[in-house]
Image (cartoon, rainbow, N blue to C red):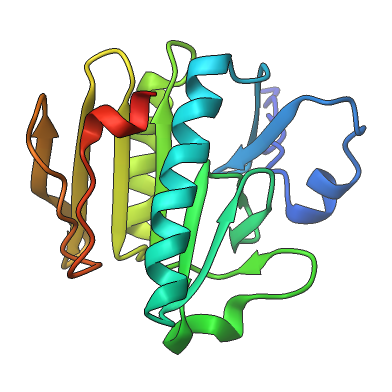
Length: 186
């Protein structure tokens, strides 16, 4: 009797990630699998910039921690390297910040949904971030014009709020911060 052995699937690591070519594409490793995204469009970048400005001003004014925008590597673990659109690391968690990347789970990750990333951001990354104990995750839907704020409860996310239309976004993580969602799209 002849037995065929199948090789174990290759699970990429941060070292593999660092060996990728610098070709202007955006790469991430999720559970050891490589994903590539095309450069984001104008609307996506406008929203990312607006979120970063609102958040950074509040965080800076209140001396809460640091805000970063992509591309900036976040190494959640050996087989999970992401580049979220915007992220926040609190002062209490600042030990995960290095000069080259973030090594561990930030306090907040924000993804602006794109047609090419909706499923990955709303399902795959949501599950990964919860598994890696990222306390807060915001998904910003430019087409639906909503902001969904998720908070980690045990090992899964609970929806803290979904802000739509003319509602004011008041994130629980940042008391005193109020954002008109319409200001994000402009």
